[in-house]
Amino acid sequence: MKSWKIFWIATMLLTTTAATAQRAGVVTGKLPQLAFSNGTDRLGSAKAGYLDTGIVVRVADSANGLYTLQLSRQRQAYLSKEFVQWRGDSLPQPPALMEAWSVRGGSKYDTVSIGLSRKVAYSSWMETSPATIVVELYDVQSNTNWITQLSSAKGIADVSWQQTETDVVQVRIQLAQAQHLGYRIAYVGKRLQLIITRRPAHAHLHDITVAIDAGHGGSNTGARGVKSGVLEKDYTLLFAKALNKLLQKKGVKTIMIRDSDTAIDNKDRLLMLQPLQPDVLISFHLNSSSRPSARGTSTYYRHVAFRPLTQHILSQLLEIDGLPEFGNIGSFNFQLVQPTDYPSCLVEVAFLSNEEDEQLILNEHFREKLVHKVYEGLLHWVKSLK
Image (cartoon, rainbow, N blue to C red; front, side, top):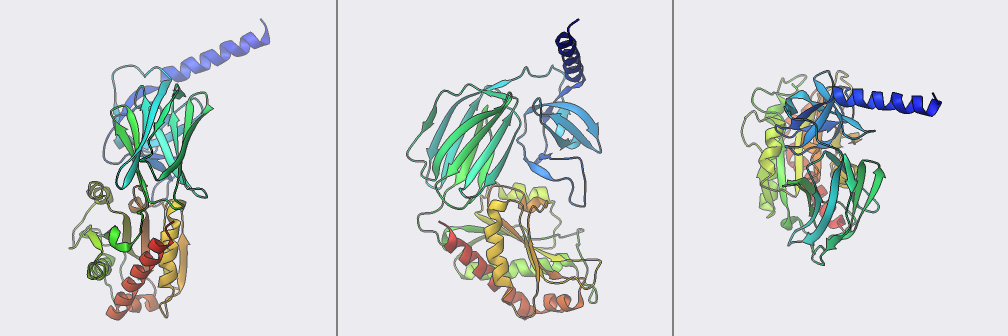
């Protein structure tokens, strides 16, 4: 038998065995997230992004509380077992087809609506210079012969697609503005829809709504002061209330995620914000380390496209006398800063595990100065929008 025939038969047997081993599941639950790996740290494995529910997926393996999903012939990802329900019917026949698109605008948002023959798994991310949203569709082949683009979509410069693999399509949405202001992605029927925030014609802090998060709360006490024994949950609330009071005094619309000592799961915080559609999120936390010498203020982001917000805020915080820099930390795998819906900044005010920082945190004058600097950072960020 010729060698190429042996290779072909072996390939077919392996493919058949792999397909037989796969099972059909449907994505369900609150804010399911695809993971890049099955590795773990205290914040869990690195996340590829949120996934809509109701998508039928191919489950190929199981380990460490995660299912391995076969997204396409060459791509795998991981999903927590809590987000998968088994289906009794057979796996969907690959591939799905990408069909016609539409691109249109509204008063504040532009919408890209991608037609598909069935719901498929996807991932999305933001690129900078130029500002671009990239969506990868898995188990898909393109049958897109037209994309209807209306002139009302003033925030979108161009859209395109490419069949990057036999069963992977990459969609690129280039924005007309220089900075990302967020987007929501979800299915409406079988159409994958992106709702993209457009820069206001005359950007001003009065035009946006700021969500304010006080980290921890209730039984989730957070860190404890090294000398005073104060709890992180109590002082994050003091910082959040002080910022809320200042912003409202300045005429800025705000949303307080919690205004009392209440335990709220991080997923529920995000689900609470979804219908309210804030334009930006500020989350307050107090740092802690096993090294007593560790001190200083820091800001955190998950998406590099949202880094400018965190840089503007950190730059202002570092003008406070006696407050050193701990850094601007990216790719931060914390649930509050993972949504793409709006720019977000987690502020680690200072270290409760450091005696000098702890004294600053306890000082009411310092608290007022810090929230003023956060406000000024927001002002600088809004003025930088192009």
